[in-house]
Amino acid sequence: MNDRKLWIIISAVSGFTAVTIGAFGAHGLKEKLSPEMLEIYKTGVLYQFVHTIVLLVLSLTNFLKTKIPSVFFLLGIIFFSFSLYIYSTSGTKFFAMITPVGGVCFLIGWLWIIIAVIRTKMEN
View 1 (cartoon, rainbow, N blue to C red):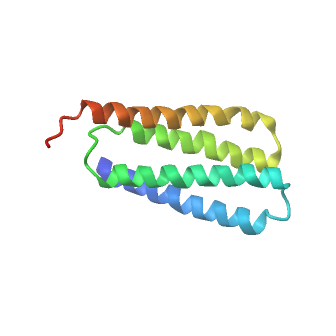
View 2 (spheres, rainbow, N blue to C red):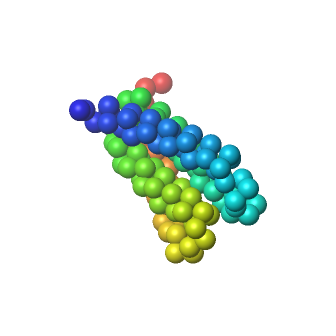
């Protein structure tokens, strides 16, 4: 399997899980979580969706020659979104301490895109 195909599959799996986790939160957890914890859960879903779409765009286009932003976005989804899912449903504060690591991964991914675009020679 080539690299591009792999990243499209990763993006699709992330999108699938975002829809599944989001629907579970909206229907299965609405009555079980406090409004504050439900908001935390929704934040994880939102960030997963946004970065899944970016992963898919990066996978479908050939503009960036590096996969480094994709790797950091995937790590961000895992550390940020999934730590929020676990924290909001379990109340275990340890997982809330992992969330900033995911946020930093998202920032690094965006920074790599900026750097890659600046380094790319573009024709007018």
